[in-house]
Length: 147
Image (cartoon, rainbow, N blue to C red; front, side, top):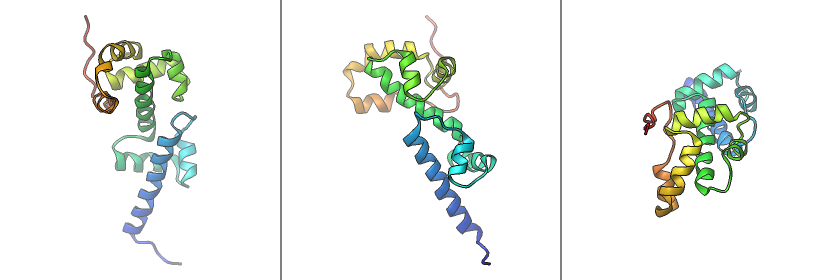
């Protein structure tokens, strides 16, 4: 039996973490949980969560929700779906959780974002709109303005 060196094991773990991140990016609208993601790369859920946070700075669940909110922002900018339809289209099963997480990352509720996007982003090219409206992770969004 050959012993694996620490750098080799670390590279293998990073490759597995990249597969998990790629799967989240691809399948964000499907029901995903840490246990299923961990099974897919032959890791325990706890080990996956610790390693993912160490590599990417956030938990797999937080990363998944950020991807869902990014996609929701794009759908809300389009303007042809209701907030509820957007919620389910991006894989969220609870409108309340979706709205809360959206407000945490974007700084305003999805309905306000949709109204603001309809007013303001019509003048910007789509590539700039995506860049300017990226969600901010880890509760760094500015407090919403109360008028």
